[in-house]
Length: 581
Image 1 (cartoon, helix red, strand yellow):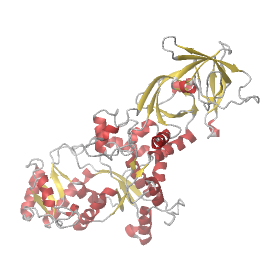
Image 2: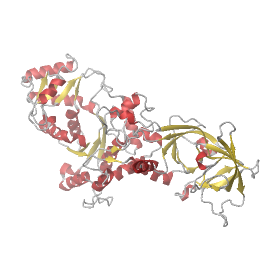
Image 3: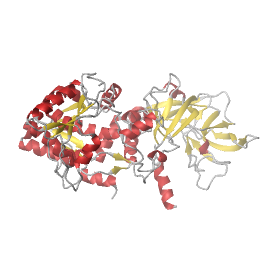
Image 4: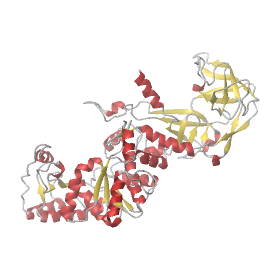
């Protein structure tokens, strides 16, 4: 069974109770929530939060978490907060904060007035740290980070107490006060919890609560030079906000005992942490570190490069919020890590755009066709359907004239038997127009390259199929005299390897960057109406795929079209061919 099938089975297991709202099976988080509501835990409240770190742009994995947290709150008539985990000033910027806000709103969610920052709670967290020192539950430690690791022990051996663990309460209070006052250099001291150095969970072995870091914070400025660790911030922030169900990805499962220990030790309101499997997607990387490296080394054009799995990149490529929400719903919520085939995401956008995107004709690699028996000074306007899936979308008029452009790939001089497009002496129907026949092939005398086809047009075949002959092929075209010249960017998968994180020792994931992930085609010919296309507009180029007007590089009257996705999964054919070999 594939990883995708596994995810779907767990998300839609028929043995699970059904949701009263949707008729589908409840996922395991919904089961927990509904049981909590039944028993009156948290007084029937459901209050979740989405807690991103503002140290990079959000990606499709975050979209799953966003849809889950905001979706659960909506389903159970609860609330969802947006809370920025801004505890590491060295990596955080307001640019990331702004981008996160934009992405969450674009996905269709709103947090109303419930926007918070972990830095809002720095004073309270400090007071709780002092409370733990006073209770003999925390101490200032002078061990270096390397020494802390050595003292921590292993999975099979208990740790050793720090030689500074038995400092007096007064000495710890004094040192912690001086840490906050900025008397000590970075990394020279930490505040650690007195938990259990023999605990089988390494996270419980006297974890660091605060470290010294003389760094400017994007919100608090230079007010602080000590910053709380994530584990000391997470649960307490949830507690302050009265979160009921604190939903995290699976890598935080081993941190849950520490989450519980902190809130219990402090004697404060106790939310429930629940972990689910993060989203892993084939042919891409989700690591913020790797995404940042790709951006900083200019291997992509920026965080919104349409080849990246960032939400801003997907948006620029032409993905819709509806398609992403549908994808997140389709893959479900699982307890175990797996990898989703990227075709599941691609099919989600195909389905949405098939129903909503207007059809147009564009020729990416033009080949000139002259209809020799068509009047030179004549222009007809053919009625074309905007979207056969949407009867309300109506029709448009497309100009037809003596000189046309067709795709180079739609003509073969030495055509195989089952080639149903244009060939010497062969016939083909032009979409919405006539049947034409290729009478002559014109080539460049120097290079032998085909430069023009001379064809005849059967004027009696407009919208008709003659009974005496069958024409199987239908191709698209654009009138040369009326064509809008546009730039088209063909985006493809960023990596050639399905799992670029699965590497042999010494291998670099960048080795598998796809050299053909972007092809830029200039001088493409499109229907004249596309010259006025606006940034963000989406279209189906008939027979070619779905395209979106680029939001960054398009200019008035000079749109740049990004390919969102092909009409079919061409990679499946490539992979099958490689397997057959």
